[in-house]
Structures are given as structure tokens and as C-alpha cells.
Length: 186
Image (cartoon, rainbow, N blue to C red; front, side, top):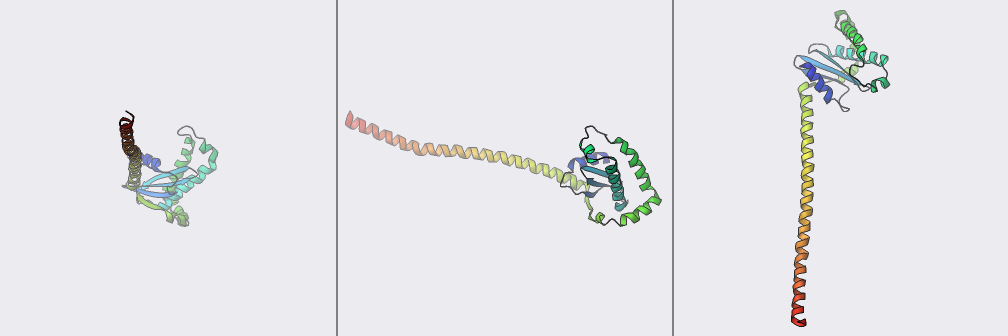
């Protein structure tokens, strides 16, 4: 269930998404950080420290930047291209879960003031926002279709109005010519 929510979250993220965010989803919280086009995601229990979670993500970000340059990230063509990074992820996770490491990391995390800007939103609200944007897009497409139809109908009515206006004048002039022709020339 959480894996599918994570995939939905990845699909919803874009350039306007916050670079750091915590999203509550049931008994767990998704923490993510976006840097240089790479999204780092962690799933933790709701009672797990947000500072520790973002310290963990920041540690992954720094190590990933050390191991792989931006050009290599941009040229990825297949899934699991950076599978060798998994070893470091496992090692970092063990050190962050270790209670002794938690204490020292909590002290380090206290120094990070930018974590205060982390927004906490309900995961369902983020997903619903994407669905409402899709609905708005559908309505805009429908409105565009209706406006084209209105434009075509208005052009047709204008043409009929011109025919009616000049058609009557042409009939009157033709009848006048016929009257003059039969009256004087016949």
C-alpha cells in the first residue's frame, strides 16, 4: 500500500513542489527532499523525529552527489541504474536507526534551522490536489470546445443575417426592374 502511495507521490511531484516536505499517511510519514532533479524519499513512523529523517535524507544526498555527478544522473536510461548505491543506503539506515547514533544525530539535527520550513501535509490532500487539477484541466478542455462551437455558430448566424438583409433588397430591386421592363418596354 505504501509503495503505491510513494509511486503516486513521485508522479505528482513537479518543479513547483517544495524541496523538503513531510506527508502524513496513516501511521507513517513520508519525508522527501528534492535536490538537482533527484528525489530522496524515506518512510518512517509518525513518532520518528523529522529532524533525524531529514538528516538521513541530507546524508544520502551528500553521498549521492559525491559518488555520482549531475551528467551521469541526467543520462540514466534504465531503471535501477544506481543499484550500487543501495549498499550505502543500508549502511546509513542502520547507523540512523541505532539508538546511540540517534542521540548524536539529534544534536546535529538541532543545528539545522532550515528543517523548520518543512511543511506537513496530509498525503491524501496532496493526491486529491492532483486529481482536482486533472478535473480542472478537463473542464478547461470542454470550455475550449464550447467556445469554438460558439464562434462557429456566431459566424453562421452573421452570414444568415447578411443573406437576409441583402436578399430582401435584391428581390425588391429585381421586382422593380421586372415592373419597369414589362410596363415600359413590353
